[in-house]
Image (cartoon, rainbow, N blue to C red; front, side, top):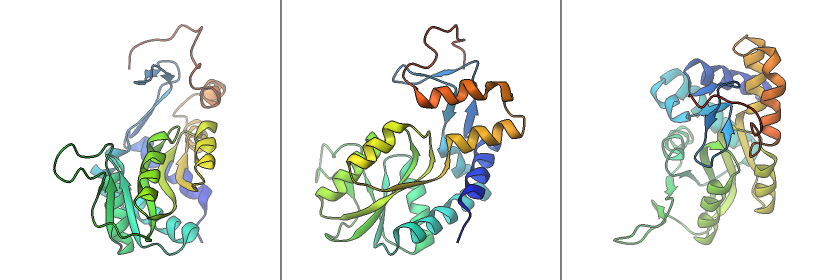
Length: 221
C-alpha cells in the first residue's frame, strides 16, 4: 500500500522544484479560455528530469494496479498524455495505444492509434485534469471502439468541482498523483508562497471562471 498524502506532497515538491508548475497569485496568467489563473502547469517538463519522470511512472503504475486492478492496455491522450502513457505501459509491461485530438484527415482516418482489441480493459493516462472535457472525449472514443475503460489516471488536478461532475456524468473513475490543494499546502509550508496568499489561491479553485474579476491584476507572466 502507498500513502496517498505523501505522494501528493512529493509530486507537488517535484513539480515546483523543476518549475513544471509556477504559482503567481498576485501576477496571474491568462489561459486560452480568458480565465485569469494564479497557476501555470506544464507537466511535459517532467520528461526532462529522469528522477521525477521515474517517480511519476512508478507511482502511476502502482496506483493503477491498486485502484483499477488488472488491465490489458494503456491509452494516452494526445498530446501530453502520450509520453506519460508510454512510460506507464512500459512499467507495467502492457501494450500502448493513444487517442488523437481528432481523426486523421488522410489514410485510414484513425482516431485511435495502435492495435485496438475489442473487449480489452484499458486505463487512460493524462498529464493534467482541468474540467476533464478533453480527457472524457478520449474515454468516449475508446468506449466507441469497443474497449472497457477501467478509469483514468493523471499526474495533477486543479480540483475543480466541474471535473468531478463531468467524470461522474460519464461514469468514469479517475485518480491523480497530486492536486492543487496539496500543492498550495506544500508551497505555503515551505515559504514558496506567503501564507497570506492562501485565501486568494483557494478562492480561484472554487470559482476559476470569475476569479480576478473586479480586481486590478498585472498582465505580465
